[in-house]
Length: 188
Image (cartoon, rainbow, N blue to C red; front, side):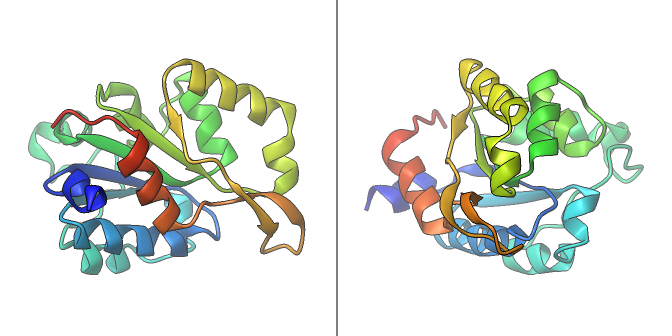
């Protein structure tokens, strides 16, 4: 029951980065909407190679945002408006590259720019090859982001798309939602 009340009317910015786990992000968006959340999807260009933005538009009823300098956004400041709009930013899946950008404050695209400007709580659900997850640079970025107060839905152990077995699979949407509703404070 807490899950349903937790997400009701919550403004969730769902950031989707490039990786095979993008299909799980579609399920996550569907579940969030079903639980009453208002979901705005922001995709990286790499994510668009794995799943079409129209999929998320159909699931959320909102146009997917992808461009940093969007002339259709009010005064070209869509990134500021989105960073202020969000009650929660959830990046799922989050690649090693995007984690590195978050960790260093690099802002090469819309998603990373929103991330840096947002004051709301932030959550990362990493998804990457097990060797990339275990790499000491990725682990350093992970620890730095945790030190900065970022909440993680740690990757699961299992078989990966490339055939490797190990940690790196994005946590299932059901587990992410359960973990957030039980352990994550939100002030709406």
